[in-house]
Length: 250
Ligand code: BJW
Ligand code: ZN
Image (cartoon, rainbow, N blue to C red; front, side):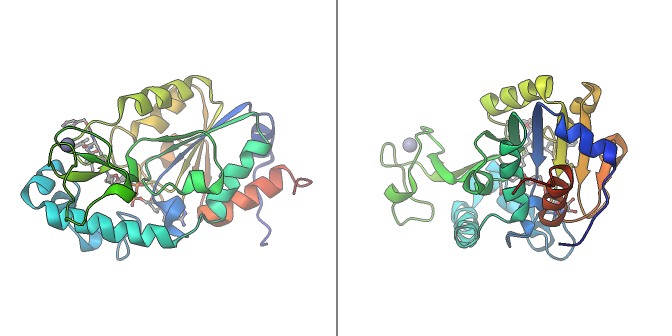
């Protein structure tokens, strides 16, 4: 592995942390082969219009197009594996007393990597529910329709993700706010930090006195609030950081 120099003060902060929060976005899954949203050329929003696919209005107008787009993304996600970035975050649980992942991602890769405390702010693409009666619809019970019909009320089944204009799941948001009370280190990994209210978390973390560490190959609007900026891909930076902080561990 390429040798990387990290600020010794940062390594001490990590080694003495009691509770680490890892706030993640699409960039952490990019090295697994899942496209991000806003990267020029490769991001989903470079090819598709968010207002045609990721809003409740779009689903009402054209449920088949929206359902098929999510079905396509689910198939893509089924094929991929957690990458060294997800695995490093999961490995942190063996080095620090408590680690909480607060993710905007819907792909479920943090849990697949072994992270045990994961807060999903924007839902999960593997969960479906009825738009009318809100009954969850397990994937194996879905009919063939695009979208399938709810077995209880005949309503359309939709993906259990959070679209623009929708509120975040209240329980997830409350848990995320609680994490800011106790986490001493707040990583901000692979997110453009443009989508609210999730993007307010790093600012809150900083104003609560947490050490904010940014991991991203590109500059973001949150660089100015981070005490440490680690410029690079999370699948490279995070394993190198763990190795530097805990050189004698696995
Ligand atoms: C790497 C890397 C590598 C690359 N390693 N890094 C005006 C001002 C403020 C707010 C608003 C506004 N107008 C509207 C709003 C509200 C709106 C919003 O924030 N809009 C802004 C875009 C302007 N927010 C909402 O609507 C939210 N709800 C809400 O506000 O409720 C209150 C309300 C209720 C009623 C009416 C109005 C308000 C809900 C937001 C839901 C977002 N949903 C999506 C889709 C989820 C389902 C799906 O997957 O399809 O969530 S949109 C999309 O963006 C997805 C993501 O979770 C989210 C964030 O994106 P993320 O993760 O940051 O990805 P990218 O692509 O942006 O960035 C990737 C980063 O990775 C880059 O920085 C790269 O450099 C980096 N990277 N490779 C590390 N290898
Ligand atoms: Zn129903």
